[in-house]
Length: 172
Image (cartoon, rainbow, N blue to C red; front, top):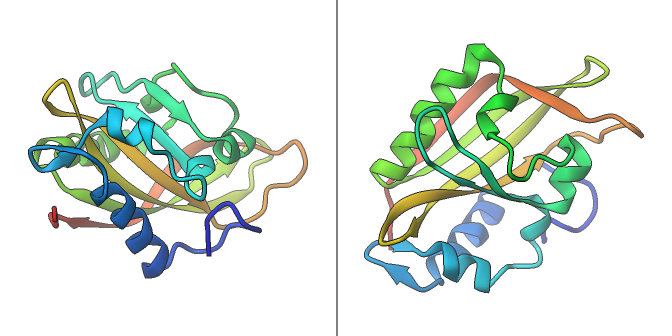
């Protein structure tokens, strides 16, 4: 299964393993693949579901890349601060998770509830991995799978609850 085929489904271990394998196959600086290597070798099955954030600080994480299927679901947010799209109740938890993912470095898998512009609740699963930029961990690549279908002209406007999370420090 490739993520770009058909309707989104719950991310299973096979898809997570395939995404991790792609990440591991890239040119590395120390323990991590570089942002340049990731951008030079995009995986067409994952690209529509990816977003890449630059971790500038605990208050600024601009979106460098936002895949086409994510744009369909959330709207275009490239160059905007990712943190502005999180409900205040979960922002601190996500900031801590992103900072830990870059600083450790480690992987982070989450399942979270998002709210659409029509008020409907939807679940999205995300696998987040660090990327090196300028010789240090400084960016995150996030593979997001929206589990349910959006209605025509419906978009996700906020993440308001993180249901579960799991970290992995497996590097090689």
